[in-house]
Length: 609
Image (cartoon, rainbow, N blue to C red):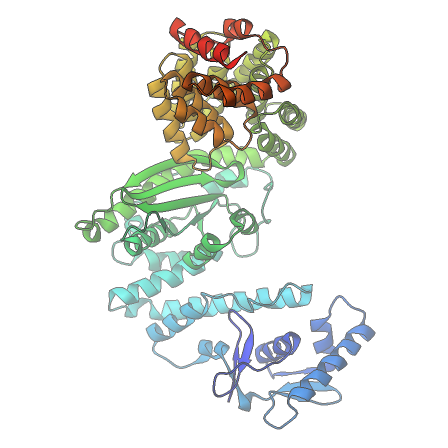
């Protein structure tokens, strides 16, 4: 008996389990015929399926070539295909397939386990997208399989007798709710399981569905489909990784799975099933696969000796909107796991609710949003060409939406960034930055972005106390927004509090481990004023583009007595800005206390500026 595997890699094996060397399109034909009612199709129908984008004559020629290859492999009565002049028929008596599990007579729970395990793999997963006919067939089969699993789930729901049975039911329910979050009977089954807190008390959340229906089509991802995904925010919970080989990763993974189930019991979210989340975690290009699955949010988790660290990220702007660390005490975790899962799920749901209105506002203006993202991708590169290109993108966003607060925020940052890079003390740039920061706050007073840019601008205008106040407010509005924390740290450097600044910038780097150069530049400045010159140089060396930090590196090396390397950095800085003047620069850089100016002057002069 031959065996056809259709889930995962499409392949056929003989009675000893050895794979048979059939062409890919021959295997696809066998799988297609297996799903047809009488397992027979005309040659024209097979050709139209395999080569729907080709002319009929070319499709027929391609089929004749394929049939010739198939006959060379096996033309006996035990071959899976019987081919005549007009038709192709599947010999079901010599072939079985994994698809038959859906129709087997088994006890409901046993059948649910088999079906759920099968659906952990993609149907015809090894088949590349060739034409619409094949793609539509695969999509239709996936809908049929999910519908059949749903029926098996309904039959098995009342027969759970163990924890393993409950996990089988919850796993199947999560798979179904991933595709159809509005399936209330399935949600009721999930909520009836022991320990699902959402069945008794759901976190206070606004109706995302109501907000979504009031906004225009999304700027990214797929349009609403026929299965109820609609415009609900989509969240993936990535399984945890381990840092330093710490034990307990399995328990941490189980905890994240519990959180997934807790959140699936809510009606306001579309949750990516754990098997898909595992694929995303392993994928080398996570950004591409997340975009392909139309995911708005991801919960990234890491397990270490300090516990389970979780951070909620808004994917389109890569903003960390929430982060928390949970203790993973081996002695208490088994009994506390459910409580931790409920707390984590509730916290994530609350943060999603707070962020969702902002997401819909962005997506309601797709052209403005796209221009904004272009600018946001450029503004982090601290070179004058990048800064000015970013500014143009933000201005373009405002052409499409005159009250688009994020664009005003970006414009403000572009002016302060140019002021820093040119080092000419141009007050007009700072005035423009302040005007745009104020406009951003006027249009969105609950966003941290406008207050952040206002704080940065106030700093460079010399009003350090106002800067600290604005950035403190920004951090209160968004306590896990790494960029805000970085700006607050930068202000604390100028407020003559380098120790507090270094502590805060380390927190920002912990939240955003692949930190942009600006974070490292800030850390270098804080280290310099703590007279930790080696650390300052190390932060500069870690920057991908060291251009903005040439002066602080030169001053640090000079204070260490390494005049040769200091001279190298001074030459690089002079090449970029040959008219740089120490006293003029120190007269415009705001330091709250005189000792900072004196210390910086000493280092710059020793370096040869």
